[in-house]
Length: 110
Image 1 (cartoon, rainbow, N blue to C red):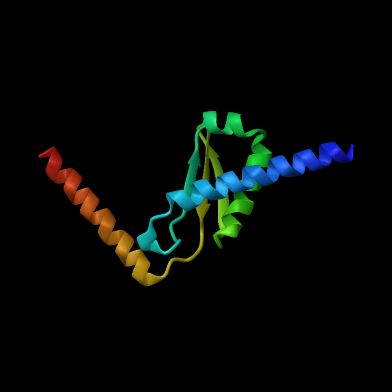
Image 2 (cartoon, rainbow, N blue to C red; image 1 turned 135 degrees about the vertical axis):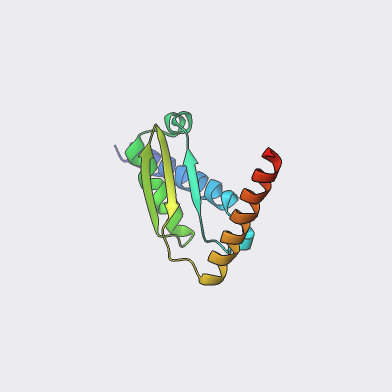
């Protein structure tokens, strides 16, 4: 039985590492690690294993990145979000980027 436990532990650690890598890749450098999010599709979830294990691994991976993680399952997708309070400077930077993107989209529609 110990071999099975060891195999399960290694699988779990590999999943945590994979999720951490995906989370890190999704971060925008200009936000200094804030506004972290990861969205896993139903196909991603099927491939990764049991939902409870993926959620637990996602929370652990997020904590490695100093996130305050929360997970939400909506429409077959798992959202992993960083709920930390964002510094004002970064919040302003993100708001400006959002306003520019909306303005650009509006102009392109015209």
